[in-house]
Image (tube, rainbow, N blue to C red; front, top):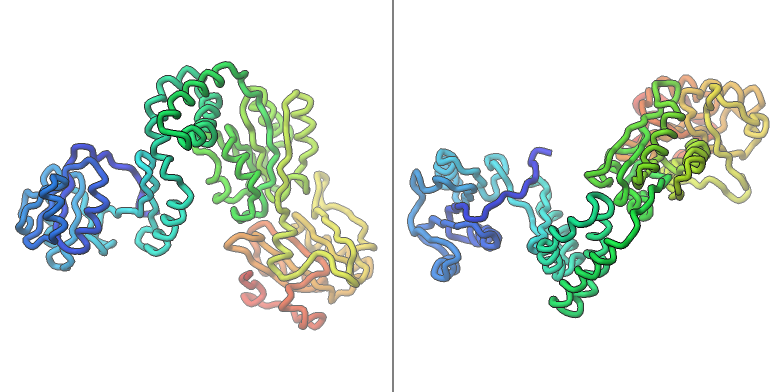
Length: 471
């Protein structure tokens, strides 16, 4: 992020613009929404600018800018539509101490003006750092359809009521009140009339003052494999409600960004065969915050019910008397198999699929290797990267066809996803040589659909061709 978004208080301050053509008109239509004092310097201004000046909406000085004209200005816009003149006026404004924007010149501008959705006093700013103005306009159009024009009215009335709402305890009780106002009682009232909103607020506050404080609650939430678009609606809602988010190392930054900004974020970074927070400590953290009355989200990668030690955490909160619920998520196996164009089961090939773990609390996990070695069997192995040689040896010992396909999917569903296709005979040293650094899911008995024709004559993959960018 090169441009940090802020909202600048322009009330009563100067904004200066140089230019009188189309570029100036476009900027002025936006700037006149503010309560700033706007000065325009233009030897030959458009008639519309002259009309605005006559109406007192801005001050027009019909000459070119000179040194000192931007003194005490908060912002300056060079909209001369001439590169040399823009450079000259920008230098004057910069010397006068104003922040400078040169229209259609991102490189030499000190700030940019975002696309704006105006529901005064609610303002949504959309910026792409000049990379995709068309995209910014599309987002703006989408938001304008979603946000009713009455939203500004609700916000203005709500602003006058903030001091009265302070009678509610700070934190969740107050947030619940405002959520009820903006998404329930307020829209219903304003649909009748603006005059109906204030009585609705009074009644709503009286109701919330009589409510009991909400008890602590824990949501065990499956965050999916990493792509935030694969997060369920229930998971998004839980994150929006959370006072405390306790998460593992596999949760993507994009998903953590969806939590409330005020939420307490606790990283308990569990890692196989490496440093991690003991499970007992995690249990204690969940219980501690639940007993304090917090809405806790225990965020787990994939689906919380698959190899997530969920039962131990449920037992801890149940014993402590804290209520909970489970929000399922898309497990890594589902995302990974979709990325290679396959399905986990297929008529005539396999009527079942095994979800296995490569290791457990005692080390490498043992399974029914004889059954897994049968022709047509399919297994999805979680946390199997470090135990790949062990798995390979057990399968070969129990008679699996060495040409059986093996696929590793690293960072399933994420932008840096990688797919490595090989066979049981070559899964090691192929995996080690590939140097996959992220979490990987191992499929025994499945190959990427594009590679099916090459099996069983798959040669030992060579770097870098062995790692293919997933589609």
